[in-house]
Image 1 (tube, rainbow, N blue to C red):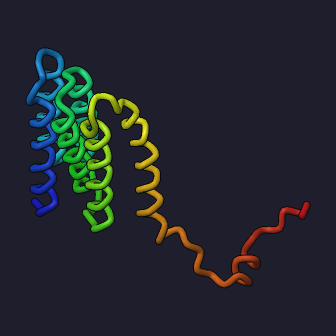
Image 2 (cartoon, rainbow, N blue to C red):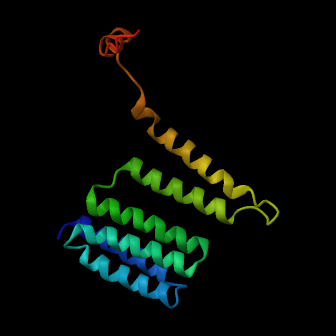
Image 3 (cartoon, rainbow, N blue to C red):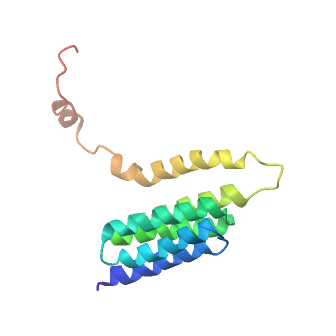
Length: 155
């Protein structure tokens, strides 16, 4: 087995365990199914996706504390990345950034600031644009950009 499989197994087990901490009844069954799917995911990659979906069900059924849900989500994202690709620096920054935004949105501020979670999607989009901005710049010369633009016939 490769090192990615062992590290992904660790994230998968952490994901299932974080979802199982406060789970009872159907939530515990879903978290257990996630653990089984993590083990199956060592050999069959689609089982990794099933494990993450089972964790989502476990979280929805058990309503854990926000930090446990964030830990399960962060572990789930890292688990899927390691099962299907390689972990890169921008990936790690994105995972940690989106997790931090989610945790801050659900736990920060006094009770009177119930509007704070509304800012989370805006902050997530801004973070996405900041992270992908360097890759989206068109570095071709203006003449080359014009030459490659198709003629639509009505210009």
